[in-house]
Image 1 (tube, rainbow, N blue to C red):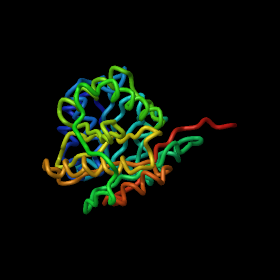
Image 2: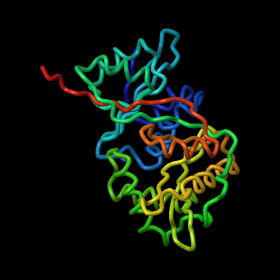
Image 3: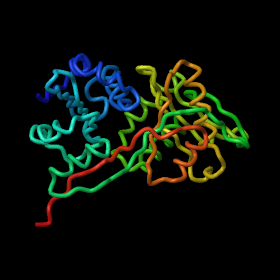
Image 4: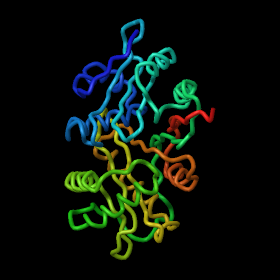
Length: 278
């Protein structure tokens, strides 16, 4: 029973890909991030090479994976309880994204910890578009919307409280998704008022992100409408499962998504190590 670590995404997927694909909803972040690393190179998310790892249990099967692309948290997926202590002995982790049980097991190895975010993964059930629908309609974002989309990406990153991203990375995301038809705007009276994106379809799943409505346009149902449209289109394009994450500290967004048909799958915590006061 051992952890193996690499910076080679192809080696990681050769070892752990079957395990990830067996639970594509719970593995959605790892699947989309590794796809981006393959597409854009090892520094797609920052200035450091990624660390990827997998744990093999006594039966030789993969029973836990790690993906770390600094400055983002180290993401842990389906880690067997007995694999946590060896992981913490092998790697110095100070910021972790994991399911609740694994996060608590990791925190037990720190002098103290803080819960930075509670996330909930949702899966689309029966899609129920908002009724009454807000004014306006959905349309695909185009290159003519680039400046607006860059501002909204930056605002979304700032509001979500994560490490954000450089202007170059936002530009790459906007350009790529626009070219591939994976960014949708809701327009009311000719004015863009909300946006939603969709990930690449991997292992039959697609994940809605980001969803952003500027403050001056909130409270009118635009986010629900554009999310419903993106979700409908993802299913029509062949996605078996359509997913999204929410911040549990935001009851408004959680309510929006459940009303249009999303159902809870699992919860995750983002936790950070805190130094002991002693």
